[in-house]
Image (cartoon, rainbow, N blue to C red; front, side):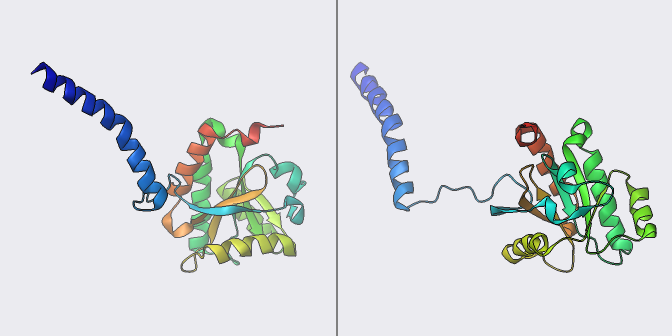
Length: 201
């Protein structure tokens, strides 16, 4: 009995060492697939990230680069004119930002318009959320970066997308507004917990 027990113990120890080697070899040769079916992010990850230059757009009231650099930025380009569904989507952005709690100051929420906003539009958006930043008159390079994202990851339907821009100025995630704000909110909470990009000077 003791010999059998010793043999079983020896076989178990060998299996602990040999099985991972076999598994690694099978994965290396492509015989089995070990990659996860999906990543932990909720939005559509843009690989590689696409650079977005804040000096290619104007920020009403101050300098866009100064205000937005070194911050996470949620960027949305509302429909023009912005009607009921559009206004509801913008209101969702307010909820996403508020849900960040103490991390709100690390994130900016920006609305992009091809032309300067009318006083009425600016007033309507500000009434929804005073923290909105109004970006206007993007140049060709700025619009080109957004267009490249939509070419890589088409957004179904007519929904305006939410772009998530990292503190280094890279568009890293794309969200379809038809899916609601929950996906964006979940990703932001994780980023606020783990990322230190916006704290580097």
